[in-house]
Image 1 (cartoon, rainbow, N blue to C red):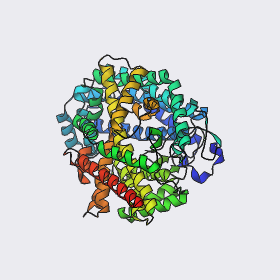
Image 2 (image 1 turned 30 degrees about the vertical axis):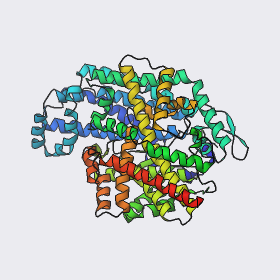
Image 3 (image 1 turned 90 degrees about the horizontal axis):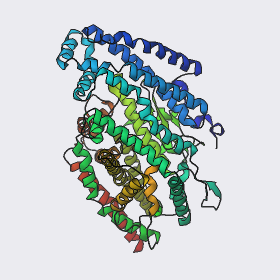
Image 4 (image 1 turned 90 degrees about the vertical axis):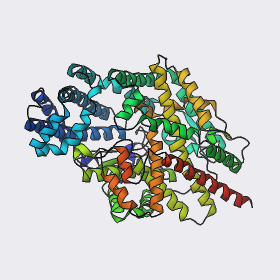
Length: 598
C-alpha cells in the first residue's frame, strides 16, 4: 500500500516540528544567515570569559535549531524514500550540516591551544559558564587526538564523503532492491520485501520459510560486489580517521568517545563465545518440537507452538503496554500515553518506507518513532522497545539542558530492552494456557538470542573486518563471506545446520555503517536483564533509581550512569548473570515440553 492509503491517525505529526513548508524554509534561511557569523568568533572565543560564554550560547542555539531541521528532513525522507522532493529536502539539510562542520572546525583546535586551567578560571569569572563545564571538559579529553585547525577544516569538508557509503547503502537496500515474489501461507503470490520477510521467516509452513530465506539471500548475493565495495569503503573511512587522530584502532576510537574500556568489548566476545551450550540445547529442543530431522537456520523463526496467532491492533497494543509497564508507576505510563495521543509514532508499513524501526528526537519538540506495524506480537515488542527509547529521550529532555541531554549510545538500548523484558514477563505470568506460555518463553529466548548471541557475532565480524583492512587486507565479498560464515558456525553452535546462504547476511545489516554500534545491543540487554529482574522482584528503591538513570542524559559517563540503576558492567557479574537467566529460560521451556510428553 502507498502512504496515502493509510489513515492519518497511523501517521506521526511532523507539524510539531514545522507547521508547514514555509516555516521550514524560514528556519533553514535563518541558519544559513547564522552560519556566516561563525567567522566573527574565529580567533576570539577565548578572549575573555564573556566572549567564550557568548560563543557557546550562539553555537548552542544554532545546534538546537539545526537538530530540529535534521529530524524533520529525516522523518520526511524516511516516510517515503522514493520521494524525490523529500530526498532533496534531506540533501539540502545535509549540505547545511556539512557547511556547519566546516565553519566551526576552528573551535576545538582553538580551545585546545589553551589549557583546562584557563577554562576553570573563566568559569569562576563567569558563573553562567558552569552549565557548559561538562562539555568543555569533554573537548579537552580529545586534546591528543585533535589535529591543527587547517587539518580539521579539511576533514570537515569530507563529512559528506564519509557518509556516502551509508547513504548509498540505504538507497540501494530500502528503495532499489527487489526480491521478487513468493507464495505465502495461503498460496498467494506476494512481493517479498525486507519489511515482510520477518513474517515469512515465522511461518508454520516450512516451504514458505525456506523459499523466502533462499530468495532473499540470493538477491543480496546478486549485488555482492556492490555491497562489498560499500562496506569496505566504510571500514577504510573508520580506519583512516582513527590513524589520522592517533588512535591505536578504529574500535578504540569509537569506544574512547564514550569512555568505554576496550576490555568491555573483548570481554563480551569472550563470555558469549564461552556460553554457546544453552543455545545448542535450545536448538535440540526446537528441532524435536518442530518434528524435524535437521534444524536449518530458516527454521529458527518458527514457533514451537503453532496455533497461537494473536493479532494486536494499535489500541490493543497500547493497553497491553500500559499494563505491562505499570510497575514503573503512573507517571511513566501517563508519559507513554502521550506518544499515542500526540502522534509521536508512525505505524504505516507503506511502500518505500525506510526499513526497520527507530526513535529519534529533537530537543525543541519531542521524540518520534518509526515503525512498519503489522499487528503481531513482534510488532508490539518493537513498539514497546522504541517507546523505551522515547522515554529515555523524554526524561533526559525534561531534566537536562540541551548540551547535556544526549545520552551515550552505550546505554541507549537499556531502556528499550527493559521495556521488552517487562512485556514478555507480564505475558508469561498472566497466562494459564501452557501452550501460550511455551510460545512466550520461546519468544523471550529468541529475543536473547537476537540481542546477545547475534549482536555479539556482528560485533566480532565488525572487529575482524576492521583489523583485516588495517593490516593491509582487501575486503572482497569472498573474504567477508568466509569470515561471516565461520562466525555463524561458532555462534550458533551444535544441533543446527548452517545454510550456505547465511554468508550473505552481512549485506543486510545497516548497523555496520554505524561505527561499532552493535555490541551495545548485547551489553545493554545484559544490563536490562539485571534492571528488569530487580523491578519484577520489587527490589527496594529500584524504580526511583531507574527513572533517575533515564533522566541523567550525559551528566555522568555511561558506566557511572548504569551504576545509578544498580548495574556494574566492569565486574563481569552482570554478563554471567545474564547467561544464568538464559539457561533458566531454556530449562523452563524444556520442562514444559517434557510435561507435554508425559
